[in-house]
Image (cartoon, rainbow, N blue to C red; front, top):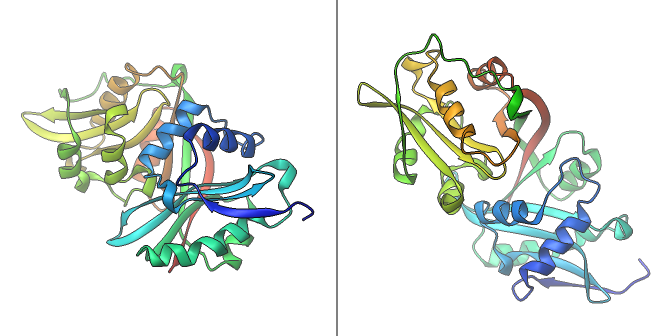
Amino acid sequence: MAEEYRIISLADTGIDEILDAFQKAFCDYAVNFDRAQIEAMLERRGFNPVLSYAALVDGQIAAFTLNGTGEYDGSATCYDCGTGTRPEYRGNGLAGMIFRHSVPLLRQAGIRQYLLEVLQDNAPAISIYKANGFSISARYNCYNQTVGELRLDRSKSIEIEIQQTDCNTVRNLQGFCDFKPSWQNDIESIERGAARLNMTAAYHAGQAVGYCVSDPQSGDIAQIAVAEPFRRKGIATGLLANAVKQFSSKTIKILNVDSDNRSLPAFLHAVNIADGLSQYAMINKL
C-alpha cells in the first residue's frame, strides 16, 4: 500500500472515534448499525479496548479488530466483536496485519482461544480466517421479522404467570436450552448487558417452566427457552408476546440458533419469524 500505516492498541482511543470507524467500515454491510446499537453490542460482547487493535493511516483508523474477552467453554477467550476496513483501504491486507500483530499480545495476556463469527456467504473473509489458523466450529442460523407480522395466538395454551426476573434465575434455568448459546447470547453476555435487557420467567402452578431475555431497543431475543415437558403448550408464545410489548424496535431478531437444533426453529416458524442470514463460528486455539 502507498500510505504508511502503524498498528496500535485502542486502549487510549475514545469511544466516539471507535464508533465512527465502525460505521464507516460497515457502511455497505448487509446489516445496518446505529451508534446506540454498536455500543450495546460491544458492552454485551465484553469489548476490551486494551486488547483491540487498529491500523492507522495519516492518524485515522483505516482498519480495526474490536475484541471482547472472557470465559467460554472453560477457556480464557478472545471474541472478535467486529473486524472491519474502511472501503477505500480494502485490498491492502490490513486485517491480516492486525491479526498477526495481535496474536502474540493475546497469548501474553493469557488468552487461550480466539473466537469469531462470519456470514456463511462471506467467502473472502472465511478464506482469510482459515489462512490464519481458524477452523469452523459451529453453524448458526438467524431469524427476523417485523413485529406486526408475528402470530402470537395463545387460545389453546395452559395458564402461566409471567414475572420479571434477574440474571441469577436465568443462569439457573440454562438447562432449558437445547444447545449452547453463542458468545453474544451466552449467560455471561446477558450478565454484562443486564441493565439494557428485559428478563422474564414463566411459571405454571408455581414452577418455573420457561424464560425469555430480550433487548427492547434492538428487538434482539438473546435467549428464549421452555422446559421440555412443557413445550408446545403456548408458553414460549406467551413469553414472546410479553417481550414484544416492551419493544421500541419495530423488528424482532434471533441470532445464532445452532443449525442442528430443531425445536427452536419450529417455534420461530410457528410464530412467523422468518429465516435470515446464516453464520459460521470459527475458532483458533492459541
